[in-house]
Length: 120
Image 1 (spheres, rainbow, N blue to C red):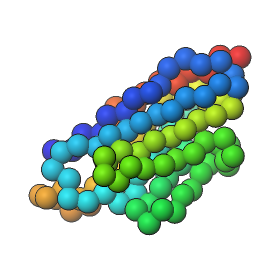
Image 2 (cartoon, rainbow, N blue to C red):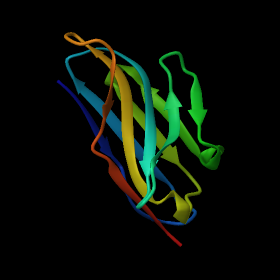
Image 3 (cartoon, helix red, strand yellow):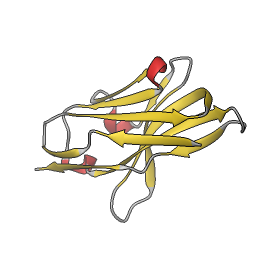
Image 4 (cartoon, rainbow, N blue to C red):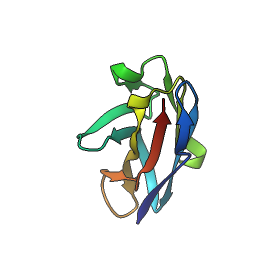
């Protein structure tokens, strides 16, 4: 009933920038928090940044000052602007959203992930 589709990943050199997008679609009644997580090979999935419906943000210490999360409420889309990328930012990035549909109460939904690779 709900899909989260990420885009914008790719290969970039250290110091470069990428902008990830995640669009939610389906029988959406409302969206609460949206966020980004990442998972490097052999590691657990970690929080990168979150943005509540009220506009509050939370960032992992490792990305503070370099990444910015934003949201287009009308488009049900969340963005992650990533600047000054480092090789250690290499991971699969997943979009996450707390969504209430017309049929179901609020639950978390995940996107399929988009690969970000930063070369040194």
